[in-house]
Amino acid sequence: MSEGILYLTERDVVDALDMPGAIDALHEILLEQGRERARNVPKALATWGQGSSMHALGSLMTGGGGYAGFKTWLHVPGGGGSLYTLFDADSGAPRAIIEARALGMLRTAAVGGVATRLLAPPGSRTAALIGTGPQAVTQLAALAAARPLTRVRVYSPTPEKRQAFVQAVAGRYAFAVQAADSLDEALAGAEIVTLITRAAEPFVDAAALHDCRHLNALGAILPAKAEFAQDVFGLADLVAVDDLENARRGSRELRERYGADASWDDVPALCDLLAQGKSRPRGARLTIFKGMGMGLSDLALARRVYEHARARGAGIALPAQTRENLLLAP
Image 1 (cartoon, one colour):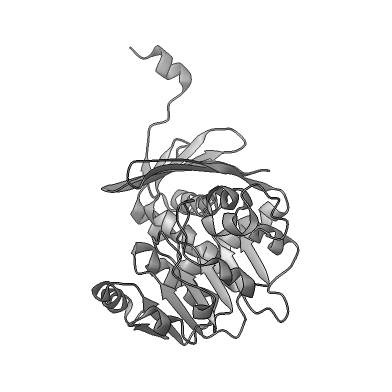
Image 2: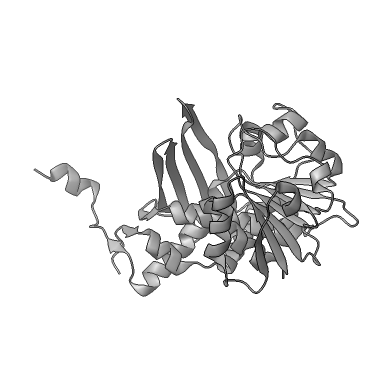
């Protein structure tokens, strides 16, 4: 196989990863981060107009066989797109350009899966999934991989969308996936709750989470948006994040709770919990995981996709170019 650049499509990503494998890849790289052998580059973010935004996330794994990479993406009212660029961290050579929509959906769900596996009560059997957009499909898969569930209730404000979601996933899991007619119905009895919405204002409060023992808040990643109310923090014995700097910059919920410029000493990152061998506090009423997105999540999956493609001769091999070739070209 040439050491040129591989172009990998969404199909290559899906062929290389299932949800349990994605969760394991995230777990592995978070342990490396906790041991200071991997690190994130803070997110670059710009917003404009009515809901348009551009983002860049970078990360690095050091040591022999290490990788570095960047995901860049744009979201505008009419659509968007994303690409991941993977580099060899030792030689600096680019290794792959990866279409990153499926990669992003998998890594967002997988980090929630890591948090659920680490923090949710081991005996949890019921869950609620709030939101039925494209990322909800992989969030459901992450819940299924993290705990042996018996029932998941699904809610979004539009009846047709939640019914279509339930029909689309029918038969995929051994547990029941049911559409709820209201938010309260979805949350009743749910020990694990995953929020994956585009809500601009908080819509879940402490009273609504009376049965919840672990909350994944994954949908509001811009400072103008929020999914849960401030009184939810009063229930929590532990609040964890994927990346502290990104949460400080972009989580309205956490910024309002802890202050935008405070140290946030009581908010650990998943990598530190894993490296220290910590999990759910004994007797905890509620744990909260706030996922903002971080470069290492993308890198964890991108390297798996690249290595899978190389081993099988997959992908489109782009011609290798050297600087000298380009300078001498007519």
